[in-house]
Image 1: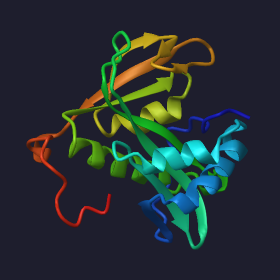
Image 2: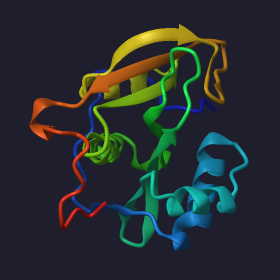
Image 3: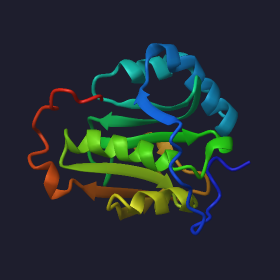
Length: 187
């Protein structure tokens, strides 16, 4: 099984009204590790998930249908550059349970993270396996453009040996990206 969704560019899902996006809590850490292990066939640590959730320089969000977590996504703050991969706010992992794909969940999780990043930084960064066409296509909607290709960015290595570094600049409506979050910001 591939680590990412098959590329079906003309098969767009529709938003599912029963899915709610919320900030992840400590209580979600084990569930997120289980979901990641089940979908991606990797070993994920609940402690690592809890650390990401607790980090004030990151955002971890979950997609919930009823009482079930059906997807999750995070940001990552790199405080150091690695070649062309500058220090800054990066979109981190995004996983949607295969039973819940094609319902707009990945798009909504990405939109929430992009809004959060653009309230804090002038641009967002994103690294992806060059073979993950579904993810690349999804992120075009937020203005991501390819910066460079390499086998590694920061600590991320790519199966097949080629990854892409992409960048999206904050839209004009975000104004000064360094202003503090507004009152009532749910994230």
